[in-house]
Length: 337
Ligand SMILES: Nc1nc2c(ncn2[C@@H]2O[C@H](COP(=O)(O)OP(=O)(O)OP(=O)(O)O)[C@@H](O)[C@H]2O)c(=O)[nH]1
Ligand SMILES: [Mg+2]
Ligand SMILES: [Zn+2]
Image 1 (cartoon, helix red, strand yellow):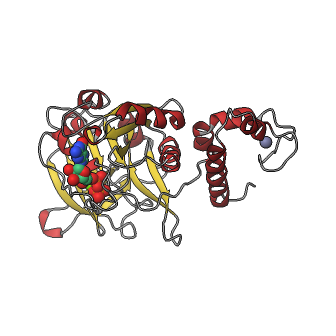
Image 2 (tube, helix red, strand yellow):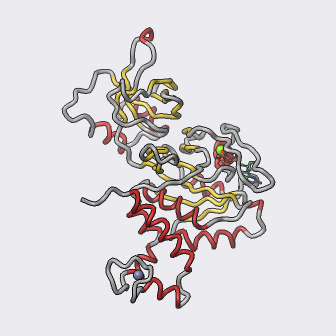
């Protein structure tokens, strides 16, 4: 490992990044003196990146640059280091990602939006100070599974409820085997278990509604106020969209890295067919016994899924949520050729 790589390993440099580095540029001569960096934050066409020499601001103009992909938080990139007088260095390559969190653009005008890249774990955060809507979990679970990283559900603010264990059971019922942790940033409950999901060079991205407690968890892990937090509205427990940018935070003592994200307003889904079957594997399993192999589990005769509902072994609301998500995914997928 080069000296630079050794320094950057705290920031997540590992064999996957090394492989991505050499897998690059077929036919394209790599310019000499490329600097390797990880994107900490993207801000209006510029990026804060970390190199072996420290933090730096570089351009992310993907038109001027050869980069075909727009860099996002967590990306590994390379840029040409100019002599200081030449102004802002511009990223010339974004390395292939080993994981990415994607949502459909809420305005529906642009295509998919990549929220973060190159993380090992997705932490789906929900606050126990408010009701836990199963539909929202399933939606976030599909996104998380689609990202190619490990998933964990983080039920935080356990100090705000009298029965955290019961809430966790409700979530486990839709979580399809995903680990559910009960946490409190206030009392410190569960934080050691959360830390064990991280560790040197490992990155976790936090996903969840505004006010669910993501930034507070980042601060608890960091042991310092590194992220801004704000009270939720007392009237309806809704958050205030306090965090405005996705930011990669290096935890002290080589405890790993966390990407804090703003509360997502609209969670679109993308190319999520496979992830959908993971989250709703039980429905798919039952569907194999339907009379028609392409049964949509609507009014078809001999539908094993609807039979499971009649017999009480499947929650009809779960089937409704499955159908809604399945149809949403189908609308987004390009027609099969
Ligand atoms: N009692 C208690 N309050 C918490 C806990 N975690 C977070 N909070 C409070 O919940 C509120 C919202 O927390 P944030 O961390 O700002 O939420 P967020 O998910 O980052 O929200 P956005 O940045 O808007 O997406 C703050 O007032 C926190 O103090 C907890 O474990 N216990
Ligand atoms: Mg926040
Ligand atoms: Zn069926």
